Length: 315
Image (cartoon, rainbow, N blue to C red; front, side, top):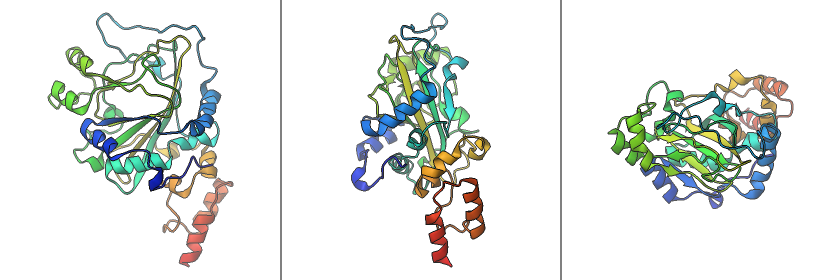
């Protein structure tokens, strides 16, 4: 099952969205996915996390020290998992959707992009104190700092499977220009208390309805916020892209997770979607009769016909 096909007529973003991305380092695009596309994804989230909610009347938890904006807690990541997931193809392929890849190509000015991270995250009112301090994500996406060359950077795309209002813990962020003004161009991993207080009045909300996406760079100051609506839930999927071959950026070494259900992805993804995680396209020199047979043995439900057909044509 593939979640739709992308053509120029199916473009879900505009030149203005890319201009906003280039200016602010972040862009919110509402209703990127349709309710029909989200329906099976939401079912998958319920399979994975539906029994994790603390209770319909749970209240927001607030463990902040007096005067602080927020903090990081292990509990915030209690319901957080990397792809692939133990559910249907819908959620597993959402981060590999062709329209997301097209957005990444446009934002990174790259013809070939790779998906290097995709994780699901469920938050519930009362499940934790989700209020965080401002931070940048490059701390765990690269060992150095993001490149000044847009082609060597990344785009993180947060996909909203549920409505995300401010009462549902919407992400808050500071645009690149505002962040540069406050920090004089600096990008500490965690700004100090004085800097946090200066960033706070400049924060914008990423609140948007289900099906929307929030795309941001790994050097954009942002923070999680608390769910305050009793009984609320927030289901999101993150898909992070980089230019293929960019070794400065990383997160998931996909083969490291070999015990996870990769057969679900191989059985349902297109060759173009598999290419996003580094699988050579049909016609690549990697594919021989032997590599085809051995890969097919590993994933019996994988459709090897396009690869075999390209191999026969080349012989």
